Length: 96
Image 1: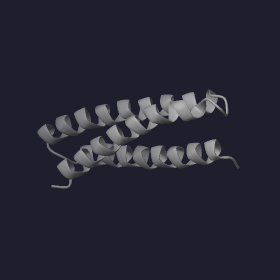
Image 2: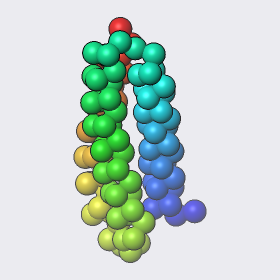
Image 3: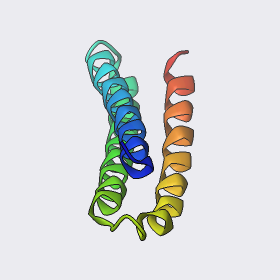
């Protein structure tokens, strides 16, 4: 397996983990107050948008040639940093 494929697998595994966290937040939302549900739904929508952006960036790498994928990697890393931050913020907010 080459470096590109390993990178894609690693990032896909992280996307899958984050999707599972969004699913947990959805389940948690149903058992909360109306105000908390509104806030959770807002957070979930933002997180789902980040997940879609991550999928798009990962697809760009999959479609890139073996030589060109390195240039797409910077964009992926930027999106991943943003997603890490968003998930950390959401987790901290709703663990209270």
